[in-house]
Length: 294
Image (cartoon, rainbow, N blue to C red; front, side):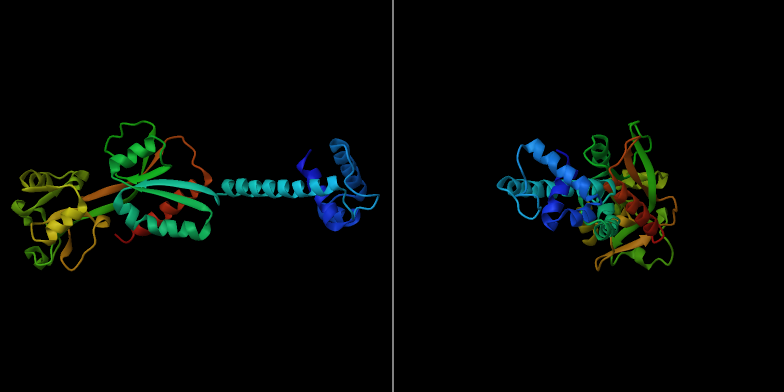
């Protein structure tokens, strides 16, 4: 039995007349009458008492109930499929480094929820290596991270999103705060430099010497900021990874090459779901806006 036959039967029951039902479904009364006879023939029993269509038989009442349920389920499934195809349903799975997760993605996700509330967002806040691994394994649809200089995985594609300049992070009372110009490498005392993993994101002979001579090397940003705030020394962090506070100051660097690239990581030649593609488009748009402010 076809779904259109059930829809015709329900229309006849709801209106109680072939003419009104025909107007609802866009068919002639004769065509509706033929459809009802086909249903009765297939089920082996009458749906209506007598010739008029305003009183159901017990079989008719049962079929009407089941038809309403079937139509509701069918229409709901069809709406879901259409919503998925149009990007209004589904799930967008993202992996991002913490700075992108906290500084870039909130604006994009807010716009997504406003325009496509039926889409679920699954966000993983992990480091660059884990982001790349998650995309490669298909655990997420796309990632935001710093891609390695030589991408060893031919199945991955990395597209630059924005350049994130490094800043010098120092205690509020540090001598470098008195400078009236950007900080030069020679201004930094190696004995008070705190190295961290992000220092490898760009190449500089001067920075390499600072890292080699650094008495401290910390890997967690929260710990790093705590040590700086308590006067242990100064460090370098990308602008998006840190915020100035009462105890910590951010100073610009004279070296314009001191930047890291935040890249969009996807599987090469793989199609995204409509929901994920819509999310990715918003990330691209928000990254262009952010690039103009940092």
